[in-house]
Length: 263
Image 1 (cartoon, helix red, strand yellow):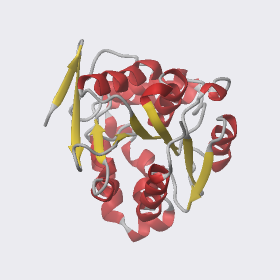
Image 2 (cartoon, one colour; image 1 turned 180 degrees about the horizontal axis):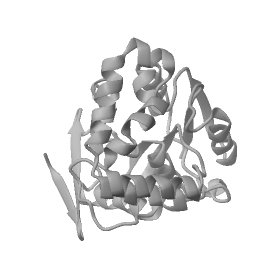
Image 3 (spheres, one colour; image 1 turned 180 degrees about the vertical axis):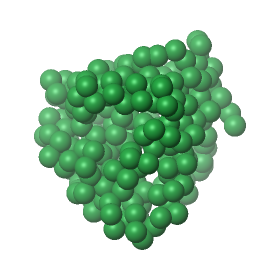
C-alpha cells in the first residue's frame, strides 16, 4: 500500500482508474476505511482517477494523539493533494467526511472542482452522546459500539436482504483503531458549521438517505439550503447510502462529475 508522509502522519491511499483523468477524492466515514467506497471505485474508475485514503486514525493511516478537529482532517486532505501534486479534485465525503467537505469548501475552494456531501449535517449529535461513546470505546474497545452503530447504518429491509454486507461492514468497524475512532468522535463533537455554510463556494451536491436515523433528511436539507446553489438528492437508503443504494448513488455521482465546471 502506498503512503504519503506529512509531519507525524502517514496517510494510506489508493489510486484506481486512468492516471491523467480528473481526480475524484473519496473520504471515508467515521469507523470505516477506504474500502467502504468499493461499490463506486470500479465504475468511477472507467472515466475518472479515483483517489481513496484512510482518514487519520483509521485503516492503515497513523493513529496520532487526539483529539482531532475537522480543520485538522481537512488540512490532511490538502496535504495529500500537495504530496501527490494534484492541483484540484472533486471531493466526496460521507457523514464525518461530509463535514470535512464543508471545511474544504469554505477554506480551500480553489482546490475543489466540486463537493459531494453525503448523509451529513452541519452539526451532528450532542456533546453528551459523543463523550459517552468516546468513554465506551476507550474503556471497552470497538466491540462496545460496533453492533449498535452498524444497525443504524442500514435500513431494516437491507439488513434482511443483505446480511453478509452488514456483517462485513461490522467487521470493518470492529477493526477500527479505538484511539483513532475516539479522536475523530471528538472532531465531530466539536464541529458546528451551521453559521458557516454560506462560506462554501464550491459547486455542491448534497445526498441524503430517506431512512437515515443518524442524519435525518431534514438535517441534510439544511446543509443544501445553507450552501449557495447546492443541489439536493434523497435516496431510498439509511446512513451508508453509497452501499445500500450503490447503483443510484454512483449514477448521481457520475451525473454531478460530468456536469460542466463553473468557471
